[in-house]
Amino acid sequence: MIPMSYYLILSSILFSIALAGIFINRKNIIILLMSLELMFLSINFNFIIFGNFLSDLTGQIFVFFVLTVVAAESAIGLAIIVVLFRNKKSINVDDIGGLKG
Image (cartoon, rainbow, N blue to C red):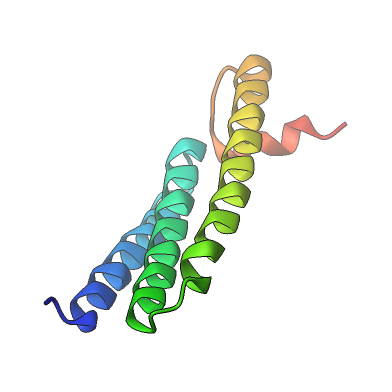
């Protein structure tokens, strides 16, 4: 059996990669959204790890609620990217300020 600490180390590595992706690249919206998705993946991984470790299904059920919120967030984010690309012909973060009504 694999110890729980290995899973937690993997989850913290995933979270660190996502955090580095957000702080290093602040220009491209798609990479920012991918980093957020990776961050939510590591958080969901922690819920599953602790739910399995404690023999409780609450953490695994909570993952489904988080996944629905993440799916809505990514759909809205992609819609914003499409609107930004149609108006500005680029997907830079600096161009979002020009979309104010």
